[in-house]
Image (cartoon, rainbow, N blue to C red):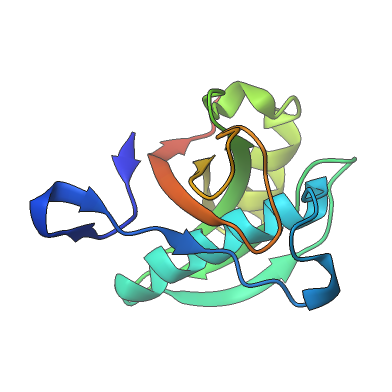
Length: 149
């Protein structure tokens, strides 16, 4: 897994703050949607740094997480499926059960379907597995993996 956080002098991790839309939720446990949206935000930032363009964000597919269509600087299209989990879990492509449907959707728009996993560790709570709204996080990225049947 690749660390997303920047490193401070002495190799100390610079925490990534979670900045919620609803500030009344600060200090509460994130729900599944908030956790997923935080992971998406981190992936989007990563893609923007690489000069990619977010073409479209799409809703759920049979209860799976939303995904997004991304255009790379070379004009190739990618269909990103993101899964965000808390430490000590490891996000894997196997968390998506409908690979065939994902591949079919991507082929309709001539995109390559890719999985991106994010693992968060809460640095501002005594329990690093606890997703706290407004907390500070260490974020790790699995890299990209292509969906295959």
